[in-house]
Figure 1 (tube, rainbow, N blue to C red):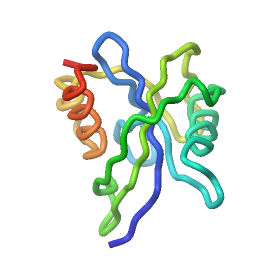
Figure 2: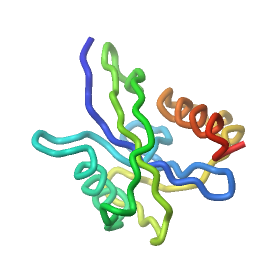
Figure 3: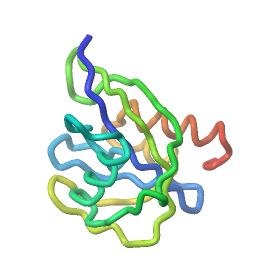
Length: 134
């Protein structure tokens, strides 16, 4: 099995999870992306959010939350290993690059989307277990 190391941003407001729409994949994902060679997950998180959402996230605004391994959406024989970080929004996300939009979702609303990403479903599961979303 092949793996890709990734990071994902967890932002919860009003019992809903912030997701970003990938124009390339046609699905809603946690904001974030691949960890480049020589980067720590925290550095990758800061870089990816700057690229995708035009936000500068100070290191102390990111709290490591959990790690998941899940099938990479739209890929064959590729597993995503993702470190996820909690963040409290202090800025307004401005989608750029391959991001078409950002929006908050409840699990119920997300499940109505034409494509669900396994990693996002696992994020909702963890957030429910921890009492951060309904």
